[in-house]
Amino acid sequence: MKTKRILTFLFFLCSFVAGYASVNDSLKISLITCSPGTQVYELFGHTGLRVRDDARDIDVVFHYGVFSFDTPNFIYRFTKGETDYSIGLADYKDFVYSYIMRDSEVSELPLNLTAEESERIFQALIVNNMPNNRIYRYNFLYDNCATRPRNIITENLSGKIRYKEPDGTVTFREMIHDCTRNYPWLTFGIDLALGEPLDRPISYEEQMFLPRVLKEAFENAQVQRGDSLSTFSDDLILLIEADDSESLDDGHTQVATPLCIFTLFLLIVVLISAVEIVKRRHYRIVDTIIFSIYGLTGCVLFFLMFISIHPATYPNYSGFWVNPFLLLLPVIVWVKSMKKIVCYYHFINFAVLLCLLAGWHWLPQQMNIAFLPLVLVSAVRSVTYIWVERRMDIKNKK
Image (cartoon, rainbow, N blue to C red):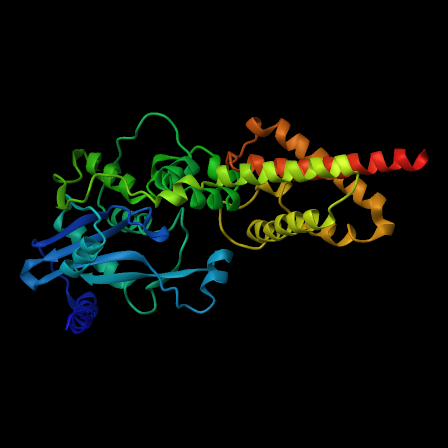
C-alpha cells in the first residue's frame, strides 16, 4: 500500500514539475538528522529533507546515499571508489519508524525559507529523483547523504548562508575517529586504507560531511538576503529520543583491540626470533607466513593508492611497511642460491623501517598506534635473519 502511494506521489511530482507554476505558502522544508546506528554504514548518522505540504497531502522525506549490497560486484566497485548510490524517497512516518526500530535519535530542524525558495528546493528534489538523475557516484567525504541536501538548499536560496564557524582546526581523520571510537578494528582499517589527505586541516563546510555537523551548522546559521539578515532555522524538534549511553561493541572485541592483539603477536615473533638466534638457524616458514600477509595487504593498499578513485588514499605512508614487494621474500627465501639476495633484501627492509620509525611523529600522516607492533615485527624478522646469517658465516670461516 505504501509503495503504491509513493509511486502515485512520484507521478504527481513529475506532473508538478511540468505544469505547476504558482507558489505554495503551505510548503515547508525541514532538515532531518538521524543519530548513528550500530552497523558500519550507520556509524556516521544520516540526513534527510522532509517536504511537508498539508494543502496537497504531502509528507515525505528525500534522502541520499541509498545502496544495496546485492548490486553486482559491490565490494570491488566500493573498493575502487565506483559505487553508485541513489536518492531515496520515503513516507515521513515510515522513515521515522525505521529509525525507531534501530533506537536512533531523530531530530527535525525547520528551515526559515521563503515560499519561492521552498518551491525551488522541492522541484530540485523532484528532478533529482527522476529515473535518469537519481543514481549518482557516491563519495564518502565530498558527496554523501549530508553534503547533497546542503548543496540542494544552498543552490536554491535567494540569499547566502552565514555560518557560525567554530574555533580551532580539525581533520577528516579526527572526525572519523570520533565516530568510530568504540570500534577499534574499523578505526584500524580506515587508518590503514586512507592516507595523508585525511590529515589536512579542513574547512567548516568540509566538516559538514557528517550529518551532526550539518545540523549544528544550520541550527546556528543566519541567511542574508540583500541587506536583511535572519536566522536560518526555527527551534530544533526532537522527534525520537534515544538512549544517551554510548553504543559499545561487545566486551571481547573491546579487550581484543588491534593494539593488544598485535603486541601479543610481536612478543611471539620476538620469542621465535630469539630461539633462531640461539640455535643459529632460520625458520623460513615464519618469514613466509608473515611477509605473505604483509605483501598481500600491500597489494590491497597499492590498489587503493594507484587504481581506485577514492580521494584520500594517496599518498599513504603505510606503503613503506606493507607493500607488494614483500611478496618476493616468501619465494626467494626457499632458494639456497639466493641467500645473499635475501640478506640484502632484509637489510633494505630494515633500513626503510628504521627511517619510518625515526620519523614516526613527524610524518604528515597520522599513523595508528596499532601499526607500531606490526612494523616492529617486520623489523625484528629482518634483523634476525641478518644476525643469524652473520653468525653462521663466522662459524663456517672457523
